[in-house]
Image 1: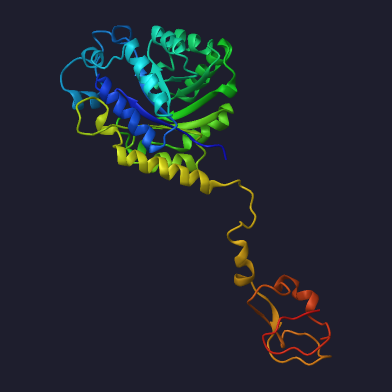
Image 2: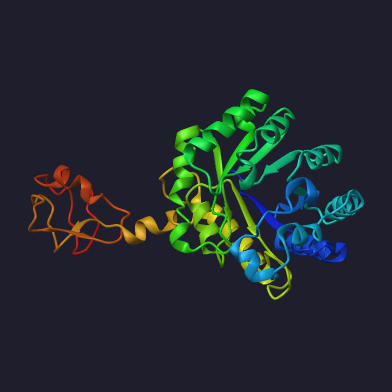
Length: 333
């Protein structure tokens, strides 16, 4: 099985502080994630002054406007340079989600090979066309989307120049945190079947169970928000994993992908030694003299399994014993 690509989503949990952002990179690397992902945007290009905040954002950040909230969370080009270099020094891939066209250009300029399209941009035609024309690998989140909207976005990306093999579609739900009853993990399989694409899951539930289950269902990419401390101020901290939880999630995913195996049903190396111990053979149920006829009266099925398999009982019944057999001795023919 190909290794699951685990994205530790730092998002805006740096709170606009480059030092917190670096600590998030350290945390993701220590946890064993494959990539750490931030968000790239110019607030005024993404959000109008009249845009309202989501309910969870109001609960987590108070009365300031969405524009005011997001403006404080921008990362400028210098910050991108610092974080990209720092991630490289920690041997973890740097990713970022662009939310506007200049930010797409910035990430391309910085040499990113994967572009993550967030759920909110799945109906943004100019944005999809621009990214589709880049010829890079794309991860497309589909929170809030219907199947037809996913289909249209994929058509735009492909028509613009991206190969379908270079697109991974993430099932997602954009409520923070997502109620378990709204996760609908089976939709990930629906997406895979409908569009013949690689699929994954972007998780906003509390805890680590759901992304682990997604891996068992075939996710090739897992994305999960994390923070240094859920009690920090900011819109996403409360729906994020803390460092120890991130470590536990990555470890569990690695165990699950190992356990999924090849899919070929055959005795494993570790269990092969138990075949003769656990299975049974045809044995003498009592002492049998040479010349006796083997029958159900003088044969039994017992361990070990190193003799004639009980599946061959029909071959043994009615045969003549070629020698004496003691009780419980393996029968030979």
